[in-house]
Image 1 (cartoon, rainbow, N blue to C red):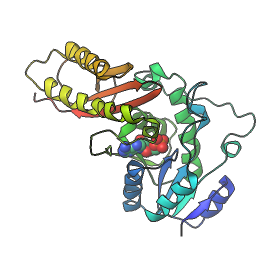
Image 2: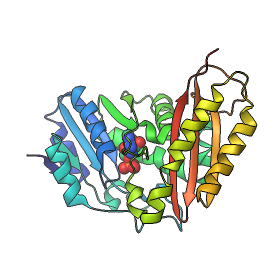
Image 3: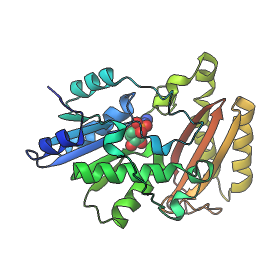
Image 4: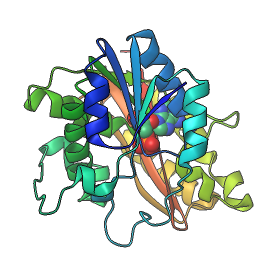
Length: 280
Ligand code: AMP
């Protein structure tokens, strides 16, 4: 039976009896992407803890905090079936006591790409992940490469605050049509479900073009953006070739490159990324 921990006090009592802890923080509405993180945590620990918490500080006013999919009972069942030992499902006031006001500016990595479009976002992520890591004190915590920039931000966070958790990045789990699994895919209507996989297909086509001899990187990126708009995406927030550690844009083939994109279908925002290996 999975242990359900509803307060930080219950969590702390539970932790007194645990040793090697693997942790998987989530916002719920679980899918196979989340469950793949659980498998990795299980392999690296003798106690796997997941959390389900829709973190208000990473949503700006007008974003989808209120309508973010919530299905806690079903999530707990999925976690139990996947062999998770305990799930932490706190209330907002437990994690954000009255008067809480700390912010974290993670530096340049947090201001690029997602940070430009959603300036509030990485502060919220850094604050909640710091809180959860200090509460759970896991040996390792697993985060998906689906949110590649977030993974880099969290690696910087644990480094900056001397948090002794090993941060593990996990590969992106996709649907058969290539669309990266995401809780927000539940918002897609039938027409949007046909367009959404074109994001990944475009990244893969672009990968192929980038791997040609002497690729005109800027114009290939512009063409890919136009391709997404022609396919029915209402907006492309960015499609960028970056250094995979700093996320600074790159314009010459080199090692450690990553292609990252965010595009909108109406009010639904999709993100995706792939590594690019140039033959140098
Ligand atoms: P979320 O519930 O969206 O905050 O995601 C919780 C964790 O699951 C984050 O570390 C995400 O990067 C990871 N994740 C979400 N979708 C996927 C996916 N398709 N493949 C791998 N990891 C994922």
